[in-house]
Length: 87
Image (tube, rainbow, N blue to C red; front, side, top):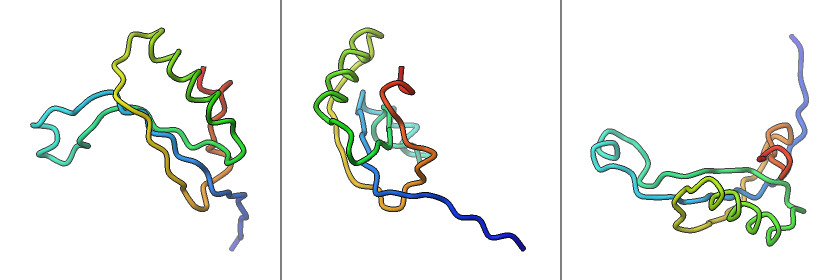
């Protein structure tokens, strides 16, 4: 049996809430709000990131309600997002 090692970090989870979900979808288990979610490195410049994401949302005429952020422990480094990867 092989043992694999993965590199993890405590990532910052950025949630962009764009709107409320349809009630029928919520009733069958869907999320209450719709939007985007990114796991970014803890050393990311959050002010710059939020500014660029607001510009991106405006450019593509997406609705915007709010940003929320939280910490995700032991997030796989391979799945981290960067500004370059988002565009």
